[in-house]
Length: 532
Image (tube, helix red, strand yellow):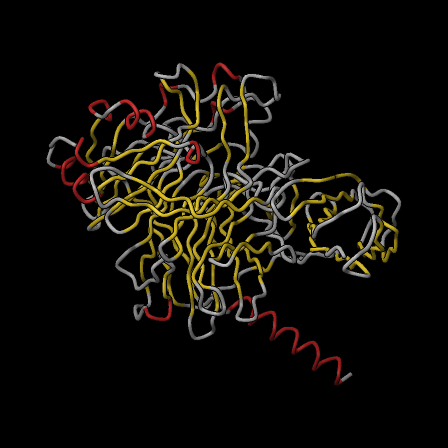
């Protein structure tokens, strides 16, 4: 009995420690910015406490009908400057800019990154008058943020503060742009040309990049240029768009990023649930962990606690395949709008855990919003906030700007996208140092694993042992190291528990390859297999 009580006390202590290691409560305070319309899926830069907002859309969720999806009339065709302290805004039309710049900068889901005073914008999707079609723009544009902000506020000409070049490598929308050391990383996304069509009818062409495209940019002269370093292709783990790329401090102190969730899986119209770490040395799928509470692009921020070597990632609302109804985790494969504010914490040993915060978004909103960080706080070069260096008990970590608001969970599935809108409210996000209980998400660890013996292999057969907790769909992909899918299929002759089977390869393999199992359309497991 004493042993049982001691074990129970230890368990309670561990759970409380896990829930309370992030000893902050979160507060959202609405702020009204005069003259700023509702926007979502835009790009932003900032300088001297002022924000520069570019592109995105003025309407809500896109319609189902191709003729009515992404109308040009709801493109954001103005540049906005916001002074959050005075709650003022200024705007200027894009109409004075050259055609290539004007058309790109009124697009949606551009890839962007601010490097010093320069905001780099890549790609984006919108109707192009010059192409007479909806296209993904093949442009890289550099913007002088402080001088453009000054020109807009003072009603001066703006044309001198832009440079632009074209290359098919930049024809990407719905990805993310980051920077590690001196190298830019264009991560994921897709090229989408033509009219959106949910039924897959031939009104468009779509190609996922399945890549991390690494390059440097030379912005020193009058002409912008770039040098391509490497294109890393992974058709399984990098087949993603409309996700969050959250800057990270990894346990060894290395700076990089984490790809959080995103859509769509190769053979299912469902989100990926596991994250992928992006480092200078390569990308690492974290398939042992699933993130359930945030699956589409939304506002997000990275926070680091040096004393415990712990990385916290916060996600604000948006759309998710899972949400809580009270204490019950609900799965909805329509991927509804949610109010959830969640946290994914990476501990010093690398373990990942997801938590539901007690505070929620005020409405079903946050999808396509941006978190604009408070640059006056101590932070790393990739904008991860240094929590331990902040002495105040209450502090503003940034602002949540724009996004889509919905009056129902699934307006798209019932053809009621007209009930959604772009949110004009800005939320000040404050952290308060005080104990705060968060709910850890259960069953977020991957229950499947498999082994190959021997490895390296000979011939076209291998012996595979794997374990699954219940019966569900089990599929596989075989990919080459250079990113080609060599084979895919279903595994049907298995049962719950431990299984041993002879796996016959579709062809004799002559080089190292990767075998990936996908269980229940949510759990992935990959292994590199050597060939003698």
